[in-house]
Length: 143
Image (cartoon, rainbow, N blue to C red; front, side, top):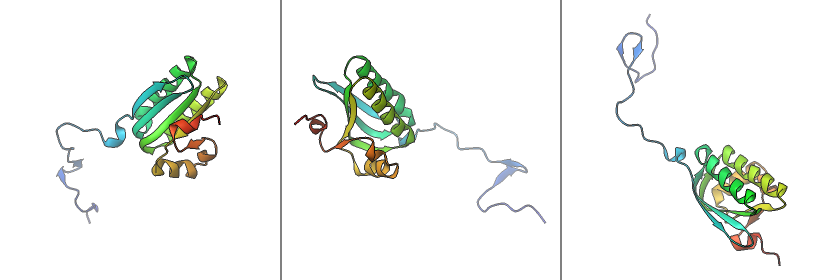
């Protein structure tokens, strides 16, 4: 009796599977880095994210936060209105930014959080750590 093989798997030679299709390999949407825009104001700085906050985009976010905090802007708002998804590395970058801002005597707050991101924050209990605000302006409103 021969070896059983799953349906649909063909071989061009005994013991050797067919090769992958030839041609360019396109990066998946999930692999593209997040777009970010940094705006510095007198009271606080805003980093607006657009896309998916995943591992490829994390170094850019960490660098942006670090440059702001090192430059004296220790009050940072992350605008998540355009963020579709955040993974564990993205959450790590947000927490790392929170720590560096607080060590510099400031704070990091999140604003305009989308529902998919809010679900991840609640699942991980990070909604208790990262302060969420409805608008960017409300994040550091001192009234």
